Length: 464
Ligand code: GLU
Image (cartoon, rainbow, N blue to C red; front, side, top):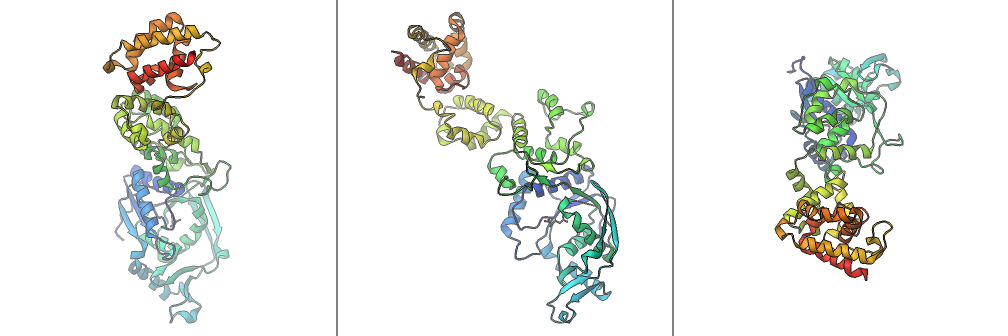
């Protein structure tokens, strides 16, 4: 063994028998952060000894998912490539008769299975989340530990590898609590020291049932496809089982957006660096962690707000339907702001688009003439007069200067004089055909001078 026992070494040990899901990604994250906080090492161990169920595509999914989340390992190992190491441990155990072939006559043919002679005793171990846990191992019987001298089964492979790799901290899902006594018996059999155990609570669906692939999105790369930000997902995952004790006085600014910093203190929004500083494995609670997609959406939105505009623009571009890509750069910038007010996650753009939320940006909206009137107003002549005046005022602005600000300045005193609702409501409605939409100045800028005037004239014609 080559490890330095003072150094914290953690591991994430996925079996490549399925995609990386939110539960296992959280396990990886906690191990990663804990190692970082202690200037230790984080090992990725692919537990691919089950040849039938392990698949290369799942292994790729796991690696890609971790990379996307920014969970970087210091070392990677594959159990399938460690047969010689396993044999070095299994052979002496056989010689010492701590393990045996079952049925015994199969030893020569190597067709049996290797079993561990259970010393049948009580095992007590400390768990960082749950405290002392005691198991009577008698009921486990002589459990199977290897298929042959080179192929340990799950428990023995974990124990040998944790020992060989100098793992100091085993942080994993609480579904592994019942595996721990077996693993401790095996540690004692090979003379390995016991790591510290932290079993983290399972993630539950909002109705407190098990989180399932069918009813809840769980695969990490699906979140990537939907346009969630990796930092938002990481932030969300840390809050599954942990909550920050807010210490305002020690906080260091982490972005140059001062406003955001004060907001962070109360709502649990953290950058990746800040999470490494703040997150505490020892503060994990034992109650089940509830998966709340709305919380994830909220967190994602908060992180979206921190992205510099140019980057946001580039990212949103990727999610825009083709019609919406044809706009002028100027209109695009305004559109991005409009979109940003409505979305939590980039994939919302498509849903809003499908619901017709943006169609008025490139299509004349249809509506009934009554909708053009502000509140109780009914007088077509007055409305016609207002629209005519709007057209006249807007015609005075040059095409190049046709921005939201300039449009607003140009019509503001007229609108104030005639009543803002009476002028701005029909202006906005003529442009968007919607009860709720951005203000008319912004839409006018997106549409451009010509189209804005055209839509006002269309409204005017409808009046009589
Ligand atoms: N390979 C195991 C699994 O995928 C994890 C082993 C461990 O963390 O001890 O569940």
